Amino acid sequence: MTESTAPTVVFETPAEPSEEERKLAAERAARREAREAALAAPDVRAVPKPVPVLITQRTTDRFLGGFGLFLLRLVVAVIMTVRGLDIVMDPAAAQQLFASTVLPEPGITAMVTGIAGLAIAVALVFGLLTRVAGVALTLIAAGALVFVQWGNWSPFVPGHSGFLGEFELLLAAVGVLLACLGGGGFSLDRSFRASRERSRQADADL
Image (cartoon, rainbow, N blue to C red; front, top):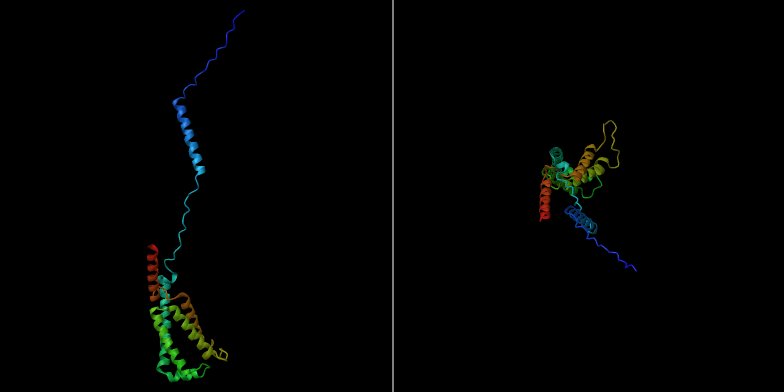
């Protein structure tokens, strides 16, 4: 009887990875960890804050716009000074004119109108409270149109060019313009506004 021989099992020891293989494995592991960290981390990219648009200078504060409004203010101030002085220096004639209208208390109304005209003139010269002066100018000119120039008659006079109240209508339009635009660059209003803007900016920087 022949004796059987058991098969011999040989265990092979795995070869040690080379230096280059270890480096590649480390790089792949590092890239995988970085990719997983990027996917897990929330998006913290900063959203740029919108920069507010600040109007540093108005068009009417520039030289041409401010100079044009300054000349307009001076012309209207001269007109209102002459008209105001006519009423204040000759109250009897002014009272007689206002008595022909439906306005009450013609003497008081005439004097108030004259003083208001002088106050408007002073305000326009210095560019102080120009918008308020523009509103007052519009009211006075519109009152002259309604109660004195036009009244119950037609503004068109046969044989005369134009119509009654052209000048007062122009003054009313100028008053509306000043009420909308203000005094412009050559005015005290602009200086006060610039001072308020500097104070507001200083408070915002704190």
